[in-house]
Image (cartoon, rainbow, N blue to C red; front, side):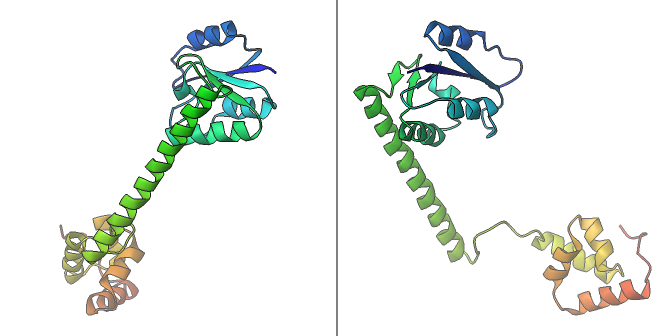
Length: 204
């Protein structure tokens, strides 16, 4: 059995010394490090630590929040370690998954993480249903709002083509084409573009 340490700070400016000293005092034979944002998924030090540990080893952290980006990520990581016969010990929270009490804590954490996932799914489903009742489908808000569409039609009426209008109201030409549809405005704007009509640069 070996004790392998993992330490992380969230920015380059923070110091790892406190964590490193605590991990070495706890008897860690190797310590892997990361200096990264708490939300950043790429953690080469953690990946290396997980690849290094073997069955009956213990991965040791100073605090649980050094290991997981979220409760769900923490539970998933501990579950993956447990499946390989690797334990987890947190020095600050005095949590050790190799003990019955530590396993009970993580079973409770796992139930809470699943509860959180279920709540998110339920809220998402409720939001989609509420939007559908208001006449909207799920997905992003439309790129071409009513206000932009009104401005576009006014500019087209002044003689600008769709490409020029799209540039003025800062949306994609294709999006504007789709929003206008096969109307007289679109046909006229296409005709202007093909005929090389003046851009109407003098209009506001």
